[in-house]
Image (tube, rainbow, N blue to C red; front, top):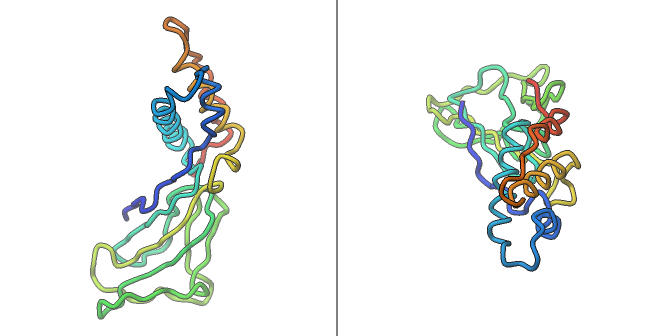
Amino acid sequence: MAIRLIAPSVAMAVSMADARASARANGNDQDAEIEIRVRALTAEAEHITGRSIINRTYEVTAPGFAGLIPLPSSPLIEVVSLKYLDVDGATQTLSEDAYVVDRSIEPGFVALAAGASWPATKAHPEAVILTVICGYGPDETTTPAAFKGYILAKVREYFAPAGTPESPHLIRGLDCLKVHS
């Protein structure tokens, strides 16, 4: 099974105005550096928690249907499609009635619906392609407060005067968001 990011987030998890204020920057001379820092901290927070903050699209590929198909991230917004190569090599889209999305654990998984059966597939490393959108929303207005607080505090630390100690406790603000699967 492989996971591939096919449409990354475009928007930032916090507004440039908030990030600029946390960096204590006057004007927009440091905007490029601030944006790089915000994006790096967003990626760090997503890695730590197993969540996507701003919407992004993933593909999960597998050599065939074999039990459960794990979702790549939380929260799931939408299953875009579940496609497969039939035994003749033609791409087919599996009916939504044939599978269910189980979110009883995070990030969740796609499972066979009751009474359905997985179709036969061609022998190919990417015979099954699940496309999903994960995230909290399209921009910073949907970013949970714990993520915003972490990112902005880390921006503040990064742009603090030399010799200012870092807080080893900031990362604990993300504990409530961690996916434990």
